[in-house]
Image (cartoon, rainbow, N blue to C red; front, side, top):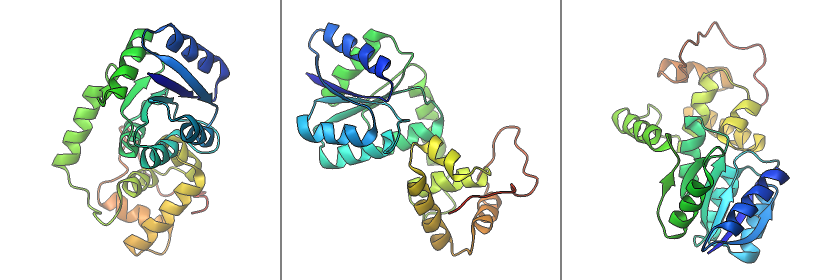
Length: 226
């Protein structure tokens, strides 16, 4: 079973390489230091499994996962990251990842998840599965007030309603800032509003953007570009 690694930290890549080479039935196939390189690596060697970080320079892990799954469905993408917020979890799964582990996972847990992904299973790390169940249950019980928006656009709108700027939204969703700007433009068009503050008003009126302990006292002083 051939396994590749995509992570921007050389020491972490080296550690994963050692883990793979020491695990029975696994073979190290190659490595990449960013999302674009991960896509090219999969195109050239077609590994059985790619261990993918989310936050990398250039093309993010989420966008790289989406491209790999679309172009090379035989490559199982398994996310291994330090990012553990709910928005990133859902964005990653929507992109087609076969599992989600945190970097604190034990070596045997990672090896087990790799083998599960290669066999077509979906596996989540400790605590992730329970959170995902709760998120999916909430999604089923509470239809979104803006059905005209795509899943990604709804995530962006929710973060907009929290008063977050484009760089923060990009970081939280594992997207590029250009992708976030494109999504904001699409949101404005679909909601038929003239500007970003107007979209935020509509989102908050619909109940989006609430965070525990958060208070909205008007709009932040700088919204950034669309």
